[in-house]
Image (cartoon, rainbow over all chains, first blue to last red; front, top):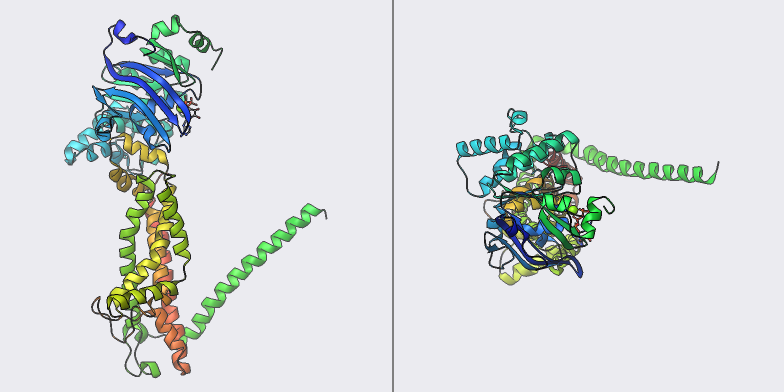
Length: 262
Length: 283
Ligand SMILES: Nc1ncnc2c1ncn2[C@@H]1O[C@H](COP(=O)(O)OP(=O)(O)OP(=O)(O)O)[C@@H](O)[C@H]1O
Ligand SMILES: [Mg+2]
């Protein structure tokens, strides 16, 4: 391990433990020997310049990296002591514990209602009344209910991009995950919608472990409890937000935070 | 006039001529069929089966061929769709994009789609004789299925490949299995395209003569079981046109008119379905 687990030092309970994670696209390494503990029910921000492997790291946490041709992964990602990359692990079961919010909203080709009900349905919920309640609850949680309550049967594409992103949030929350993974979730949104999503994250932080990739430093400062800084496929530094922002140990982190590299 | 402007004019003229040629060919075909077919067209043609004297110019109609063609193409379309859908989902959802099997399957489909239908008919005939089966609706359906399967797979594959990868990932990220992703999300997004692919294949099957020439048989009755022989419109047209009697020859155009109407109906249905089914699709 490159660093002793800093999370332990400040009394944070780890939720996801990444151990010696390496990811190669073909022969090209994208992540090299990453080890970190992601704290339970806190917002962890992943920072770093473009191409440093932030997306790759996030997609390793729910094994979506697997879908890329020629990808090779070694190391461990432990969620509740279950290794995600164990060949015997049941991927669908582990993914159910995580909601994903991508850079651009990716609604499913169905109605607003069905988008939110999709997760519960595939996990066996058939009861109409229960589904209605779930859909309403999670749309409220994502702050979209008031805007769509009268048109739940309309196609998801009839929503604005900002609304679609909140719909995707509601859809992810509806599988009742413990973890929310978000890859630059506000980069395609206007300032008002971005603020809306950020606000939601702040409301959800006590109940969910949130990992957010961002290249907006101010956003990270506003949201993060814990920060991971990456550079060229390596994890340079990680620690509580205050420490990283006010007192970075590594030169690269310092330069990134002061805007010398971006 | 400078050179670039001359080029522009030249290509505009070329495009105009090409467009004109296509429209003229279409009008020529439709016009001939209407002109020669309409006088011999009557209600009997589409409601009656041939009487004994029909092939000499006597009373009757081609209902047997209409029903035969619809059963044959309909059956083959159902069989092909049942095979094509899993294959296309296998290619796009289950396999790694660059795998050899995927590349090889796509290549085979390209080759098969280019094989003339008479080859399918001949191979079907040989197999039929080897298995000791009689020419029948069933054998016809099997041969036409093989003929339209690659066409359907290619058309579906093109549509399913357009489904954005993020969409399948969004489904997977919620804990969906690949089967759920394939049929609840990918197939749904591609639904208009899949419907069009099915109808294109049906159109191809209903109009093909060579594949059923030796394999489906030909008689004057309505087919009543999978084992009975089945007449088809393309073969009916072929026989009528080869008749020495001018009256019967003209009936070939009436039969062609019926076939054209069927194919037109299929195209229009495809259009309407595409519009209806794309309500939820994400563009
Ligand atoms: N599908 C892929 N195939 C091959 N190489 C890839 C693939 N995806 C990413 N890479 C490479 O892996 C490295 C890390 O990419 P990644 O997308 O994780 O970076 P990132 O930090 O998310 O960048 P950005 O801030 O621009 O989104 C890059 O060098 C990239 O070129
Ligand atoms: Mg990225």
